[in-house]
Length: 522
Image (cartoon, rainbow, N blue to C red; front, side, top):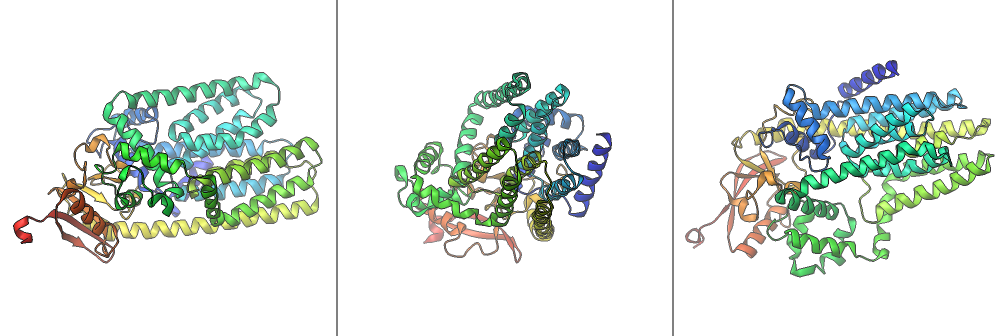
């Protein structure tokens, strides 16, 4: 195990240097800035998507020293520990041929490289939960209680990701333990700890009215932004409560007017989107076509295992598990975009379950077929990793040569609103987020966050002298965000506006929206 920890630390460091490592989305950088204090001036444990218990640990670590980016380092440690556990369990599984272990080791490291190149708290939680779940299947009490610690940690990092992986691993855990009730004691304790941590997180936010309101608002907003049913014409043409269609479109584009799309409005919208008929939700299944290659290979692997197993109990389990996986993937796609990080969280436990259920008999045809499909899956994800690395390189170039020069024009005390994800904050060095010259960002998932109380409580806040808008260089094209924002300011607040271009380049622009005095209009 010690050798594995050293080897996996070296692998992580090598991948982080070669690829190199970068956060997949701006979300992690923003949470890192909240934790290390560069956003609000003081390290804070309200990390929005991460449990406050984990946040408090990070705040304590940043209190020791800010020379270390603890947010990123903690993820690296969790990755290395989890992979070491998975590899150890894989190579020590009895009745597995060396060629089988080699195949699954290969795809495991290929998928890990894909996760490293786009580091993210969701995939980190999924990897940690998988390691914990595998330990819960072993007979040793030491292994099982270590598994409890890992699963609880995964739930602190990202509860939904841990829950998804736990759901996919639950059938194989039950299959392994059977009716031996003593084996379930650690699992019961684990579930109690996870629930307790969720209660602590909820009560912490409930104890502060501003954070309580923000938490509900952001949860409902996230459900709308990530729900394909929210984008359908049926919803947009029949909005509840007289909500303006353009305001709704701007919400879906991460640029809401907080006064028009307030908490009550977003509750009504969430209820309306949640009540769409099943027939409409079923149409979203076609979005799974972007995972056609991966899903086809998974189905072939499961089919090969089903056809070659001679154990009736295992045969029935494989059939039911395959059906369970298909239903779960379809269910997730009904009212959510199945993002790549979520799909990776599903792929890892499915592959590990396949390994645990490999038939004991090894026929030559099955060996060749399994080798072929596993190598195809490995090759596919090597290509996907290279593609992600190229995208990261483009993002770093954009950040360094296009985004940063514009932000340098913004005074240190000013606020910045970015349109959607056009600003590549994610390209910031994940090991040195603290030195980054930070501005307070508003709107998007920062809408109504207490750090920005009364800064941009409506679109009128966009016209503050210390408010800058970071947008694309083509911001003035018809039906883009900025013209619609100006239209809504005129409609709701009776204010005419003009755009002052502060600085721009061929990709991005930094602008300010200013109210036009009536005499100037005349």
